[in-house]
Image (cartoon, rainbow, N blue to C red):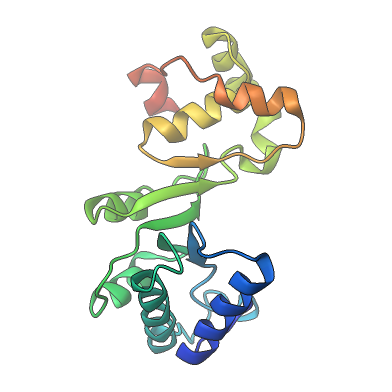
Length: 189
């Protein structure tokens, strides 16, 4: 959608995207970041600008242009800022969450407010696949390390977005008919 932090700019961007894709509505629209990437997590937190963006997204939702609205990479204080004045609370917060990087406090906050947490890079950008302890644990369950990682996030109550272009990996990502026991979940945490 491009980075814009003004109500009118967001409205135009949504309309332009719908026209360009020849769609009547968008299934899920996310604010990709609470600040521009070049300023990410710096001094200017864009609290007022995010309220404008959110108001435009709420209006698009009310008009049926989008079916769900949410956030991406928002921290608790970013979300609290929106909750202070929003009519429609965020439905999703898409965050980086995987074994070795699980922001438990943020996840608990979102879950407490009925905001679905969607984990991107649930396989840790592929870095965790070679971890010896994870390989041993995955073997114990008769699954791949990737499947172990996905099941971990799912058991935390998160939605996951694994990335793959390999058909075998995609099929494996859906074969999650096992449960990680409590002791192993604690170890993974």
